[in-house]
Structures are given as C-alpha cells and as structure tokens.
Image (cartoon, rainbow, N blue to C red):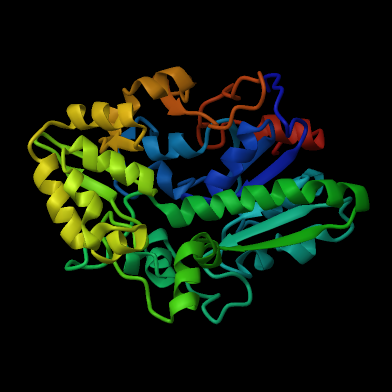
Length: 389
C-alpha cells in the first residue's frame, strides 16, 4: 500500500457495506489514511458495481468508482462457514468494522457486534441502517428515497402546488455516511485508551431528521408543519432563485442593508418605503408579491449582468449551475477538488477528492476503486500472515 500522511494512518477498517451510505462513510475514512478493506460477495460484489442502471465501463459503474476510491477489495462468501470464519479473523485484526446489513443479519454468520467484539483489544463497530436497532421499523429495508419521504424532507421540498419532491442528491445516504464517519473518528481515542469495544448504531432516518434542525425547531415553535416553498425561505426574503432574461440565479438579501442594495440595483428606491416590504418579517410574509415585483425587473437583463451588479454591491448571489457548469467553474479549478486517479478500465479518470484542506497535506488518492476481490490474498498476508486459502 502506498505511503500516506493522513490523520487516520495505520487505522484498519473492515468494510462490510454496499450501495451508498456505508461506502461513503468508509471512503471518508480511507481518504484520511485508513486502510479500508471492502468485503464483497464473489458472485456480484457491491450492488453499485453493475446494477441500478448506472453506466458500466468494463467491470464497474462510475457510481462504484465514485464511492470506493482508496480502498482494497477482498471477496468472501459469508454463507460459507469457513469464509465467514476468515472474515471474523480479519475483524479481530481490525480497529473498525462498518456494516449496513439489516439489523441482526450478520449475527447468523458470527459477524455481529457481540461475536466480533468478544475478547477484542478495542473495536469500534458501526452499524448503518435505515432505522436503527431499536426502531419499530428495524426489520424493514430502506433506500434513500424512503428515508427522505419518512423524515419529512420531501414534505418541504418542491413547488407549493406540486408533488413532494426528493432532493436530486441522495442526501439521506450521504448525511448518514458523514455522521457515521464522524462518530467513528470521535470514538477512536477513548476505545483505544480503554480497550473497551463500542457499538455505534447509526440510523439513516434519525440522521436526516437531526440535519433538519431548522424545520423541527420551526414546528416546535409554531405547531404548524413547514411547507414546500420552492426555492423560497420561510423567514427571509428575497432569498430564492429568480429567472433572468437568459437563465436563472439565486439571490440572498438577508439583511435590511442588503435589501436596500437590491432596491437600488433594480432602480426601485420606492420599494424601500413600501409598507409590504418594510422589514425582513414583512418581506417574508409578503414574499409572493415581492417575488412578482422583483421577477419583472430581473427578467429584463441577463444573469451575468445581475451577478456583476449584486457582486459589486456585496449582495450574496450565484448562478444556478448545471453539474457540468459547476465542474468547469474557476472555483473548482482553484480549489483543486477534482483530481484524476488511475482505474482498471477507464485509465485516468476524474474524481472529487476529500474537500477539507488539512494544512499542507495533499488529499489522499493513491488508488482508484478496486476490482472485485483484487486484494484478497494481499490482505490476508498483511493482516493475518497467511493467504485466503
């Protein structure tokens, strides 16, 4: 394995996850220097390798490549007692185990928390699931859209007159993965010092509800369910996306001073004295009328004009980018978020790297996503001193 200088160098992580939430969690740990070993079924591997309709290049989809960089792959059939026993031996050599099976599913293979933590020198065992171990829904499967729906997120996403909408980004998966990685890293010092193993129960539903703190506080404060507002904000205006003559842009005038700058930019000083828009609370309460007034002005000129005008005035604004537009934006070039990594089939291909700058340390990118079972013998030799046979 290539030398790294990450914060989690030397950490051994056994990755018994697939699809998105779990693999995203373990990829973050790998990005920080951990030696992450991905355990995959030899018949198919991770579901995202070839299913879900993602474009497949040779052996794998780009979705798999995007969530499994910096890892090694070991294939094992857990339904085979001998192979499950070998994986249990790897658990004994690991510092962290991450799994996203339904609660209790790994117990029948001898790979549940109670079994692998017994006599361990100190293990962090993280279970990522839809609902957690104590929920009345614990036995149910869950994917991102189900969690977005149940959490209330879809009820506040979309246009007021349309159907509830899910976020285009699988936020339930990625927020749960972030919480799991954060909890693992935070737990390591105490577990290492005490030698006592720890079970982390990370429910996707709870994670997404916890991340909806503004909406839950709104409900507790008013007793009224927050509503779908499109891109508008329930307590601030103008704070939304607007159409220009050639596209769209987002505007956030979150203070009285910024509001006056908007009035001057559209040459409507009279709006400053309009009783409907006098205060932030007034503008929020009457934002449909406000949006109609502003939209009429914004539609007369192109997006570039408004971005320049508001930028000059210090009013936060931004283009409504497509994914392609954002990836070609000068910000991405300057931040060096996108690097190229060698992959088995595609050769050097672009990926987004760990986004937090950690001093002068470069982001870890010493390997692309692995081929199925590519490192089986290598891992057994390094971790256990023998081969898979």
